[in-house]
Length: 287
Image 1: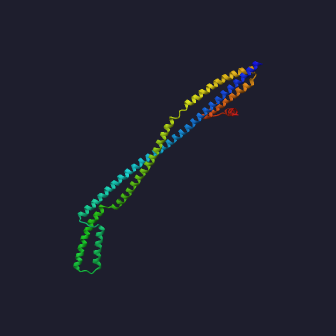
Image 2: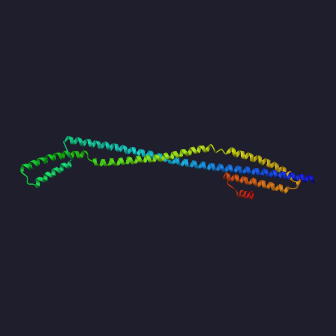
Image 3: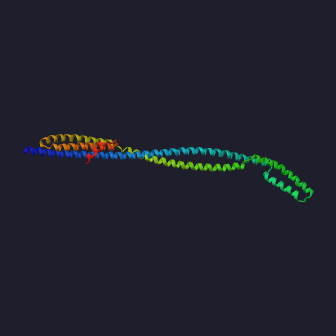
């Protein structure tokens, strides 16, 4: 009777040791789960940063390309403006030369108006013959000057249109310049934000060392499982003497259910596909 009592006490002691080991194994499993959760959260943030960096780089490159295109357009406009301004200066110089060559003070329209006034005076007023001869002489001189002044008109034909074009080109150059500045500023902002995120990303990479922790947790769980197997083996041997085989079966079943549940949790963490059997075993192991 005394031997049976000692065997039963040994059985209870072993059972407590098994429960302690099982609790330690569960705690280590939870610890491992927490590490995986942190790892997943870390890489979610890492991927988010990478996505933002790619987006900012794309926007920056697009704006850089726009700036290049606008600068090329501005250069073409400036070259066109330069040519038109040179042509305008040439017209102004030519006009001055003709005015000096023919001793002109007025343009052809002003000379024509003077002729018409004199002709009208002869036709509508009663003036002495000598005076009329004098006016006719003046009209003939004005006609000569008109022919000379008309040559000036041909030389500077299109001057007003050219002046108008120059004004428009100057406006376009200024507008293009402002667009270049705006796009360049926006591109610089994207670049600076991207560089700040790259710096943050580099700092994060030095912190994402989860493998040693996971390996340590796996090693600890392997040691606990091995020890638990040994303790369960001993418990089973004792149970044969104590007549508690049914209890051992329950312990073994509970252990296996826990192991199955842990495998399913591992699949959930690593995002592997779950079978119907996995779900049923997981539910049964967590009741």
